[in-house]
Amino acid sequence: MLCTQVQAVPGLLPSGTSLPALASTFAHYSCGSWQATRIPDVYVVPFPKSAQNVLAIFEVFNVNIGGLGLPLSCISLGEYWQQMLFTILFPISIGACIFFGSSVFAAWSVARKGASARYSAVHTWMGVLNAGGLLALPHLLMLSFLVFPMVSSTAFQAFACEPFDNGEAFLRADFAVRCYTPAHNTARGLAMLGLLLYPIGVSLLYIILFRKAHRAILDEKPTALSRALGFLTLDFEKAWFGWELIEAWKKCGIC
Image 1 (cartoon, rainbow, N blue to C red):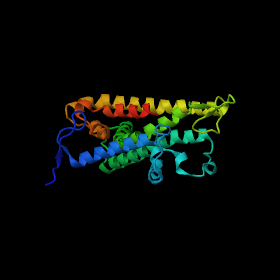
Image 2: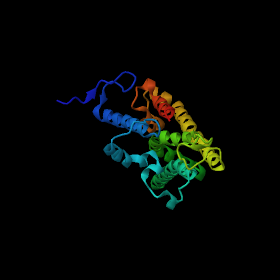
Image 3: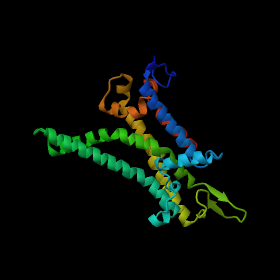
Image 4: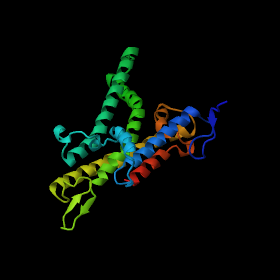
C-alpha cells in the first residue's frame, strides 16, 4: 500500500507532508536547480547535444531572448543594450498584465455582488485594487521566482570585460561591444537599473511581505496575505518560512 505521508527533512518540509505537496516541492527545487545550470558562465562543462536541445526548449522561461535563436535584428533587438532592456522590462510587462487582469476580475466580482451604498467610489476602487493585488500576488511571486536569477545574471554580465593583447577590452557577453564606450556605458546603466529592480527590489518585496505575514504564518492562523505567499513559504517548516529569500540570494550569488 502506497504511503500518502512522508517524514520530511527537519528544517525543510514539515513532518507528514503529503505526496502532492512533496511533488510540488520537488518541482519547485528542480526548477531552481535547472535555472542555475542555465546561468551563462557558471557551468563551463558542456552538456551532451541531446540535453542541450531539450534545455533550449525552456529558454523562454529564463527570459533569455538571445538563446531562442530568433532573428533579433529583424525585431529591433540586435544591439546588446536592446536585449538587456527587453530582459528587464518583459517580466514587468507580464506582471502588469497579471495585475490588470486580476483587478478586472475583482471589479467584476464587486459589480456582480453590488457595492454597499455606505462606501464611497474611492473606497470601492481601493478595495478592488487591494483584492486584485491579493489575487495576482501568487502569480507574481511565481513570475519573480522564474525571472530573478536570469535577469540578475544578465545585469551582472554587463560589467564583465575580456582584455586582449592589443590593450582593448570587449564585453564577454557580446564581443561586438567594446568596453568603456558609449554603447557599453548604456548597457551598464541598464544593468544598474536591473540590479535595483530585481536583486534589490524583489528582495525588499519578499522581506516586506514576510514581515507583514509572519505572525499569521507562525501562529498558523491563515490570512489572505499568508495564503497568497504560499508559493514561497509552504515548502518549509513555519520557523523557516522565509528561506526562499536565501535560496534566491544563493542563485544570485553564482551569477
